[in-house]
Length: 519
Image (cartoon, rainbow, N blue to C red; front, side):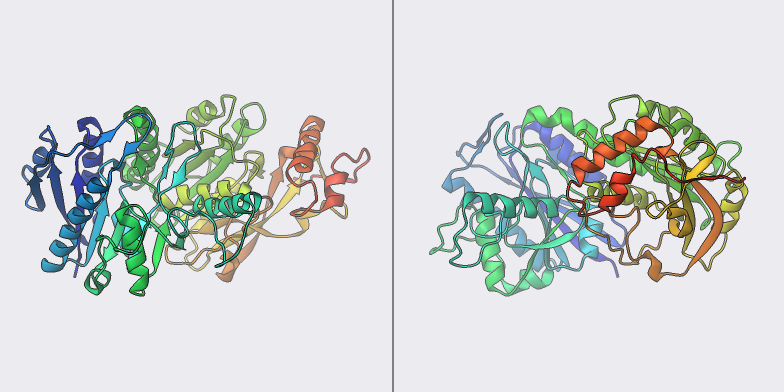
């Protein structure tokens, strides 16, 4: 039986912002769910809610009139006590409606958010009684974005034991750790949340509410809700897989365009990859289960080996997912031009994160699994298979009993020689490069900022095979590249915490031991 979800929001909102919110509601996925909507129309001077409900039987609008004044401008939103507790009563009325109408979940959401299409289906799948999807906001112009979830008290973003005294530096370090955690896809226990929250019928029945707790001085109805929920024995969770966009200021509508392009480029790629008739000549009908998706992280690769690598990969891939880490050259244009013959998902980060590889690797992984891949082949922009890959990889992908393939990677010191010594012997070991995606598998990562691995660390728990197909690593071939990498590791890992100090030092060895590449 399908779960019933009531999506509810008190609405007093500018027309241009509300239009975006309602558009996102129209786009919500509802697989195995029945979605209904409830709005309190709080003195709006437009007809957007009425227009949204037209032709729908699952929308309830409750008009209300009052003389109060709610002000929000390009600086911040101004909340008075009377407005806070009026909104609390609105939210309580939604709780009552959800209980009386027998809904399985109530999703309370603010009307200045643009929701990711997968928000509801994902939150329901978590099986939590209270969980919010995290979004980030510059509460004051010029400050760093912060989440709408917190650790404890009014808005404390760091853990501290009762009675523990922390100096400002320690408070900052702990807060940074909390914020870094929330920047990674996952579901985390928190102490406070709001504004984009799914609440189960169990929690509703236990007596959660937004009413003021008379002996609690914390500001805001969400804080009183969270304290009451914890006192009832309910845990609070924050999820970071599908963050919405917060239109906190009207001026931020321009940034919303980029957010929508990002999330819907993945949706378009999904449709394209499933539409066999749209596949170009040369990419015949590949059976479901044997399609190969190239997954690649790039940054400033246009003048290196990117063109060669992509042209070679086009001989055996069916789809490409590219994460561009804020390239400053025409890397993106090169990717689009070379890959225009196949379905392509390409996202560019505004700010680089190359100093924290795990963030990029997990972002690339999430982008790739969004496309519902069969096989995920992760190559860097300077890695290329030997020529026989064009035939062999396709046949490997057709084996139904294998879940990953491992290959040997050769560090090429020029076009005809690879390096081999105590610290340069990667080619003697087999490492996974191509993995069958298993949706229900609990993937785990090596959480280190450098050398974290391109795949989740536990994929080897599945059945895999070693292949004699070889991969060339071209990134060491030029002296300038070696010098650049040497200084990069010196900067990112100065104490050799994540790598081997002697190997770092050996990069610039003037007389390395080289072995001929035999075709």
